[in-house]
Length: 168
Image 1: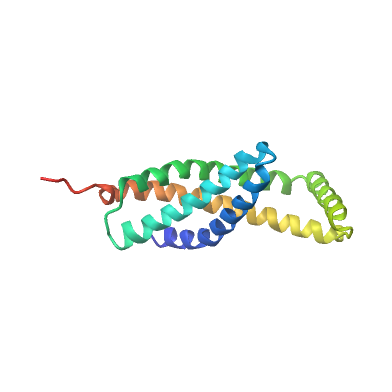
Image 2 (image 1 turned 180 degrees about the vertical axis):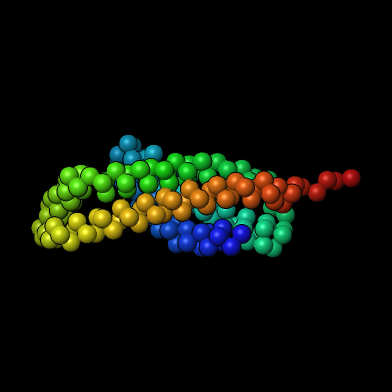
């Protein structure tokens, strides 16, 4: 249970950031519908993190009854969160083990930055930043996957939390 609490608290600020990025990306995706799947995944991770944290605080720790719809919200968004986590880990490992791909990403980033602002950032700084972002993205993916599987086990263990009192 302690590990689950720790992972939940780690995911909260990440989910807040992803939710904020999802809202910004939604504005961009209105003009580029191909981005909508990514926006959907970001928002699902934020919703999953919030609903699972609510379940932890109210259903498990405070031992209050929760609406059965909360369980549905958690489960549906957990599946998308697992997919997001797997994609994050695979992409991070793939790029970190392929220096040529990282160099291409850095060159594209430097070119876009130069076009937008007219200034450029040193490529060594971009390379280190990209590597750190990939490491953080991979670790976040692993945490998210572990958290969702723990959530599924706690949903089973505390299934009585979602039972509505029977009316006589």
